[in-house]
Length: 139
Image (tube, rainbow, N blue to C red; front, side):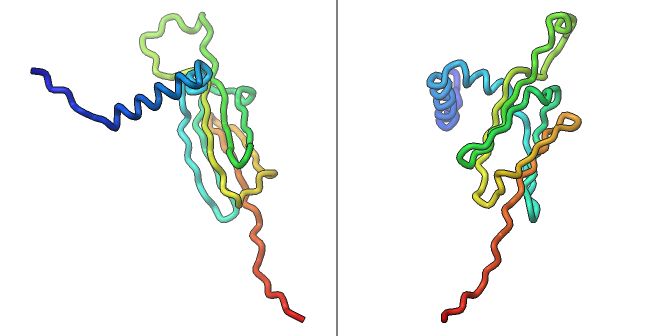
C-alpha cells in the first residue's frame, strides 16, 4: 500500500493557478516568465521600491500607474543562439516579468521617479505633503 500525503490547500492553489492561466491564455504565462525580488522601504516623506533585475536593459522596462496601481513590467532578453552553446547548467530565467503594487492615497503620483544601477531598479514614490490642521473661527 502506498501512502499519499493529502494536502487540500496545495491542490486548491494549483487549481487556481491552472484555471487563471487557462483564462488569461499564453500572455499570462509570458508575463510570468520570472519574478524579480522586491524590497519596499517607507521613509518620512517617501516610499522606495528596490527590484532586482540583473541583465534587464533600461529600454526593456515599462513602469505605469493607473487607478492607484503601480505596474512594473519588462523583459530579460534570451541569450543569442551563439552564446547558448556549451552551457552545462543554467538557472537564470529570461523572458517577461510583471509586478503590481497598490499604492496608498497619500502618494504624489505626479512625482514618481525611477533609476537603474547595477541591476537594481529603484522607484521613488514621494508622499503628498500633509495638510496641517487649523482652527477656523466662527464669526
